[in-house]
Image 1 (cartoon, rainbow, N blue to C red):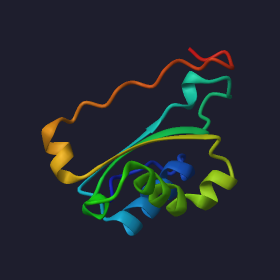
Image 2 (tube, one colour):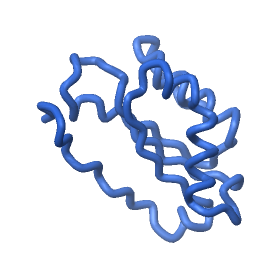
Image 3 (cartoon, helix red, strand yellow):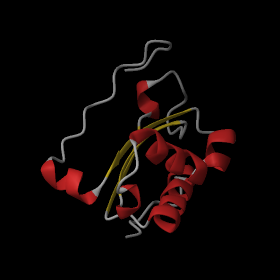
Image 4 (tube, helix red, strand yellow):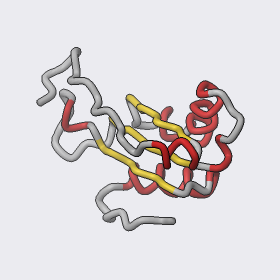
Length: 111
């Protein structure tokens, strides 16, 4: 599962590559939510990732998030301002694939 990411989205490309390599997900969505915040058009600063992986089996939610954050440590230190994580096991994903929308930005001029 690699997914095609346009050349003009280097941060999204890096996030995808690292999560695929680290977690071998059966499902992965990377949603750039930067447009919802007070950042220039085309920014890659705010993301939501939906990761479904066998590596999350028998792990509490906090440890799942730590796995994702550890994999993306460099990106979180070098440009990603906010990361929302939905981390599910394949069994949980089969029970429901609905992901709640992110709330509107409260600290900027997001649309």
